[in-house]
Amino acid sequence: MNLSLISKNLRKYPVLVASGVVIPVSLVLLMMRGPKIDEYQGQLQELEKEWGDIQLNLERSNGLNANLESLRSGQAAIESRLLKVEEVASNYEFFYGLERESGVTVERFSIGLPSDGSKLYLGKDKFRHFSVVPCDVVMNGSIQEVLTFMDLLDRQEFIVRMDVLDTFHDQETASAEVIKARLRCHVLAAKDD
Image (cartoon, rainbow, N blue to C red; front, side, top):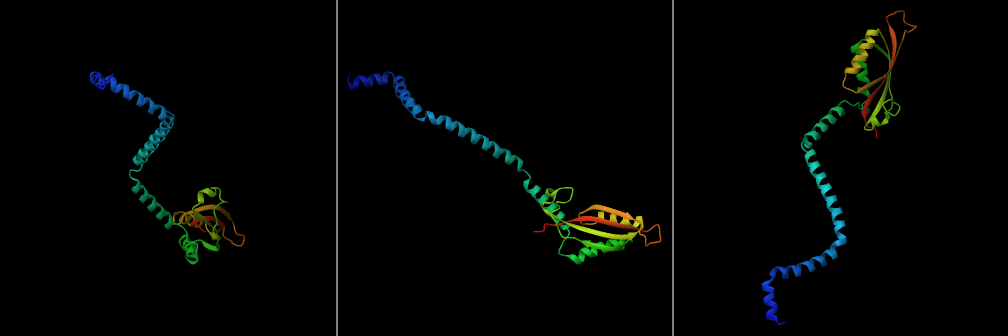
């Protein structure tokens, strides 16, 4: 067979010749890349899942800046309502101001040390960002004055949890209308590091 005959057959059957070249080359490449196909399929599935997660995150992030601003304003509102432990005089003045408004007579008042709130029934986890300051107030007055004191304490700016109210008649007082009350409450304060 000479070269001109081969050239003539190549021109006569170009599809057959191209197939004869492409098929063996494809088989060689398939045999070389065959073991990696499974690995690439696994990577493709992981990438498709990651892309789906990215798309979902993009959908959910609409309005994220507005939500962050809302959270920051809420945090500022809560922080403005926290008791400032270091301002002892203003804390005492606050409770004695309630005394003047309600008409009770505060016999004894004390503010305890800030704690993590673990002894409260709500559990320590609820207070992980705050401290809790216990307050103890012993007062004299009519039942209406004591209830007014508690109402004023409930409606003021600080976040207060009233814990125990003990009421009893004082033996020293002749009036049946005057009662003695002991109120134990907890005021939310900034985290004590």
